[in-house]
Length: 233
Image (cartoon, rainbow, N blue to C red):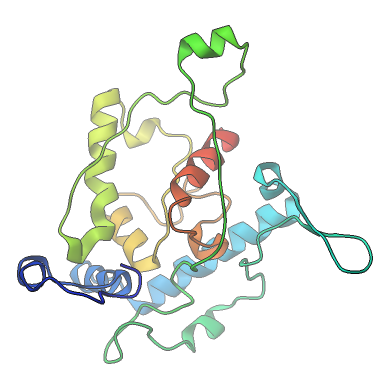
């Protein structure tokens, strides 16, 4: 869970532990030796990419504006993500305290995704439906995969899922033009990249920033990054 467990099954605690998401990120940072500096640098890069995408209008391509009525005057137009922090610096990030592990912790609010409100939608259609309704698809899903990992290192799951999905499609990471990876935590993302052999500065990786900059509304981020990847292609 995001904030830890309230009602713990003793057997589950014995078998798997009851680490909250932030604690699982600390576990990965320890296992993969991800430094605080590396996490902050990754977070800064995400913010910089998102800021650039916001300023260029790229992010606006995937946002539906929302009108918010006011008691007086014209309605306010909600048209861009509020979580992006264009003024972030490494110095500012370095001053933040560890959020989940007081002694020796490295995961902070600055190198973690935000718990935000948000919604995303997409239409999934069969080839027959595309023809019947004369639709113009943005992308075609050719493979997917689901895997399970130990709960205490839940964030490493994309590694085996990626390998499995690529194998099913008879493709490799070298065949990818765009790589969208959910940035639940910088430590988690860097651990996944380390396992997959992807450089954190790879230009294909989250070119418009990721969840550290944009936020991570639980339940919608998967749809969001699929749509982002489709538009980028």
